[in-house]
Image (tube, rainbow, N blue to C red; front, top):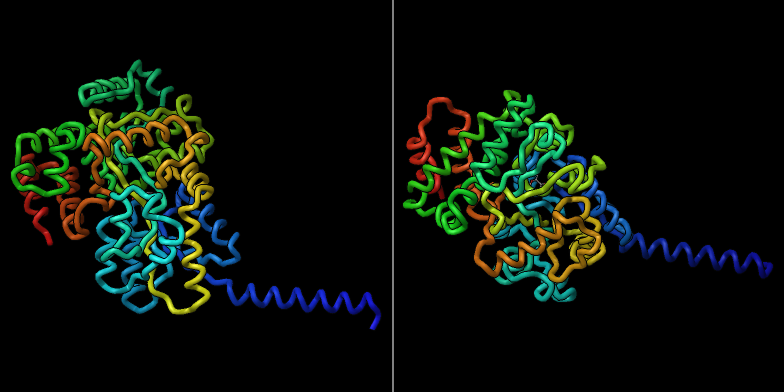
Length: 419
Ligand code: GAL
């Protein structure tokens, strides 16, 4: 054999060996998520690219539906039939509920190797652990108590972006008079509750919010403050359009983007939509704390729970994904697209816009002042059973022409007892 032939052969053998070891290590991760809107899909793509860069493959299991109700239903049936995906978008107290079923994997080795206890705020790390072991990995911090406004529409109406509820209704009247839909809303129960909890925070303050909506204290749920909250909440409905029922949240955001509507009460995943549409914060759209909530922060932390799976290569891929999610590069690119802020402590915010910088500052400040509160609408605060029941009660009140505030209060208080 000539020298050249020999070198070629040897090269080919080496390549074959490399390919076969890579194949032995490369795994597949099936990821259940509900990130299907413009900004969300870009963020999900960043996650997929991160996994693929590690040599693994991504099996997309996207179930459309904001807030994730449909995704949860599909997940339940997959797990019951013994065919869980490797990772699923599950958050808050639900992580504990899934862990109690014995279906989640312990990824404490990944957490220890990457120092998660040091780089995560304890309030976040605790939610990711079951009996002291990590079973989930957080991706971001979303702020829920935002108001998004179209400055052009406000200018046309001669209105000012509101900082309290009186100003909110004054602005809404002006927008209406100018022929603009004042409030873009999607009538689905999680969207109704997203509005409701911002009203509760703005009207009642953080202490009331915690007592009524987190501790589900019966006295607070039946108080005069709650009456005021419900009255204010219902008043907003008069400023939404007749096509709101059933509308997806991102279509409501699109109405604000186009200037067809003036404002939307929604978490900062809405910012992902503005950004994906090429809009600039401060110029094309404005972010402001929901009326009366500038000194508080309703948090919503997206996370992936990891399920017990068998195939060794897939377990390796699952763990690589978990480690990559908290790496600084991924935290940056993902959150720039998603509208949220990095969940890692001390992350570099230089590439982020003013809305994100404000969110990051307020997250730290409100944690100190005691006005950092978990979102009920986004599964951060109470058991999934209680959450579902109070969401339904609040939406029934929103949708009914007959129900009185007193009636609604009694129904919500009784729903809060659901175990
Ligand atoms: C939230 C979720 C966000 C988001 C939104 C709309 O519950 O945490 O990531 O995209 O629903 O689907």
